[in-house]
Image (cartoon, rainbow, N blue to C red; front, side):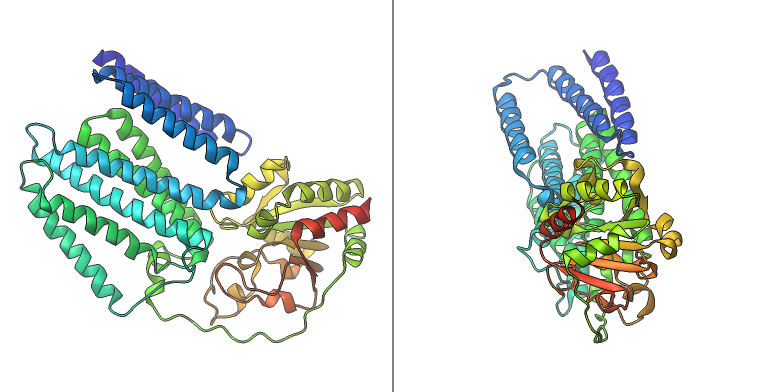
Length: 451
């Protein structure tokens, strides 16, 4: 049975890799997700058969409960709640790895290698679990999205790290089983996860989600070594590597280092200059005349579009403008929304053609030739302070340069700042017009004007 199990792990690994490759394109992502799920099913089934489980009753109970919870969330969670759900699932992966590592200490004849892998599993799994819970709280508003700092924060973090190292050394010298050092290590890992995420601002949460996803993969990989499961090692390695690559890509898109994202909350917070100017509201009828006369329109979606569930109305507006002879495209910022690829998923749900989605680096050189830009619920990713105000907290972050277009129509409920809490001078620009109201209702009004 062992040989058959190893062959099944090879098949599962191939499906994981193919699935991960397909996730890189919106057109093949759904199929890639199914392939990865099939690979995991194969790995789980053959692992259960190979281990000679005495009773499968509780295994099936766990499968039924897990499947039920997954089905419930898949059917009930709205797109606006998807980022915090991803963060929560990262946490579940972390705590699962921690529990697997904890169970591994009861293996007979525990050696230094086993205890080392358990140490790594418990440490990374604990950090992932508690850090993901904090990220979940920041994303859904249960925890303030602003960086949370306190006096002696660096000293506390260093003390926790030193304590982890000390507990780890004593733990490695135990003979297995639950010890006071293991329990202390678990508590310290959970504390470090909280301390690591609370000083990170809400605008950086997409990067944090990617990083925590990588952590969950590393924890799973370490758990695979602890229990000698090759499929878990491969799957964890893939998740860990892809997560850190995505994290680096997003940091590059924000023109910031990972260390700056993780530790900038400890530094002195910059004070933004007061914005002066006059806001120019526009009615739906006047906005229609602007769009009707435009040869090219670029739509910049943001989290506000997800909140209003306006993606289908936006799709309808796009079709009407195209029938009017207007060239329409969507400008997608790498960190728009609350998680990586948030806007791509949202627009795919509304059947917006993938070739209409243009990345920031491609659209910015063309922006001066664009007649009209429609900003729907986006804020930080179009904030010109990032390029022209050195005192701005987001200075240096690449943004979609909408101010270069002839006209900018901003759909927004109010003049409130974005998720980062930074005010946006775009609203006061000479070529900017504010269409206030719920995004779905505002787009619906524009659709009725075209009809």
